Amino acid sequence: MPRLRFVVFFSVVLAVYALINFYIFIRGWEVVQDTSLGTLYAGVFIVLSLSFIAGRFLERVQLSWLSSLLVWMGSFWLAAMVYLLIANVAIDIIRLVNYFIPVIPDSISKQSVAIVVASTVFAIVLLGHINALMPRIKTLEITIPKHSRLKTLNIAVASDIHLGTIICKARLERIVAKINTLTPDLVLLPGDVVDEDIGPVIKQNLGETLRKIQSKYGVVAVTGNHEYIGGVEEACKYLIEHGIVMLRDSFIKIDDSVYIVGREDRSSGRRRKTLDELMTGVDCAYPIILMDHQPFKLEEAQNCGVDMQLSGHTHHGQLWPFNYITQKIFEVSWGYLLKGATHVYVSSGVGTWGPPVRTSNRPEIVNVKLTFAG
Figure 1 (spheres, rainbow, N blue to C red):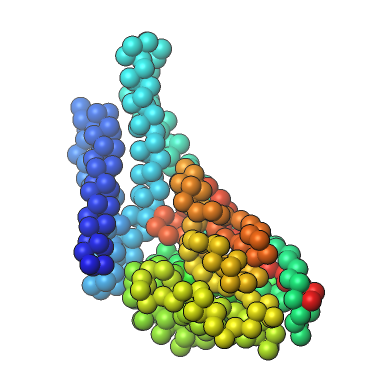
Figure 2 (figure 1 turned 135 degrees about the vertical axis):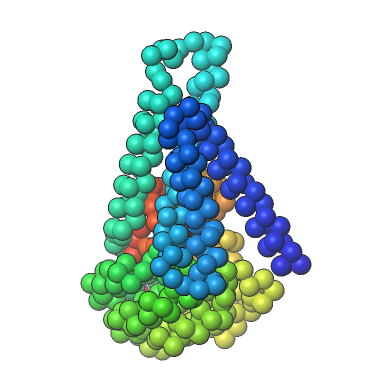
């Protein structure tokens, strides 16, 4: 049944993707069909619209320069496609209004409109890419009213790195360097450490770059939905081999002072424990930090006496206007919430999925400075 559900979902996504591209193609074709650029336009459009799917497929068959090139091209196209769709829908609405109430001067040609749209979309994607390459440090200072042998704990949180073809060695090196500037006691990775296929991660030896993270108590991670997309067992095995502690419905105690509880991602379905089950054996007299990749049902953490929950997954939409959708789906799409006595922070993430572009927020590494005052 889960496999059938996945096939149906994937088929629907492909159908929608095809329809959107067809719509954009037709609107562009109206501009160039009577010019010498028609054939070139059709060829380039077909390559761009198929490149992401083709590149991801080739990655699973055999990694090569061609698969990487196609993934990069297709990833940028995904962002361009969003804004080309918005622009063309807006133009069609204006044209409909103009049909009943003429407001558009006859001097404005289709070609000039196309140039403005293409230039604007190019600028948005370029600036969004530059933004995606510049994660900021978000500082969060929280006091937990519980006794701990530790008086403070300095944590660096980097969710949704999405290691793979797009988040490559150079990008990861910069992320690791930024984490190390915080001199953290502990580094937490709340899911989607790996993008999809583990192949590009292995080929680029990204695990050795992860080893460069410096922290007193090490690096602790949980699974996200993308580890499940690419193969969760292979991804976790690779991360463990490179010094990452994976909490999969389990917990550890840091310096006999603070519990770190990690939930398996909800993609695991029936294999995921309830939080009540997972918390069996956790002494709530001590501070408790929970990592749960997808920030659903935040009341569970509150009811179980969790002091702080750290999540990611949403990217806060990553591309405007999808942030409005994630705000409707999640109680917190991005940022801080005090829910009862539980501090919740949902990070926008430090990496990107799909388009290496961010237009709805800044990528971030969260520096959580905890003080214990019990």
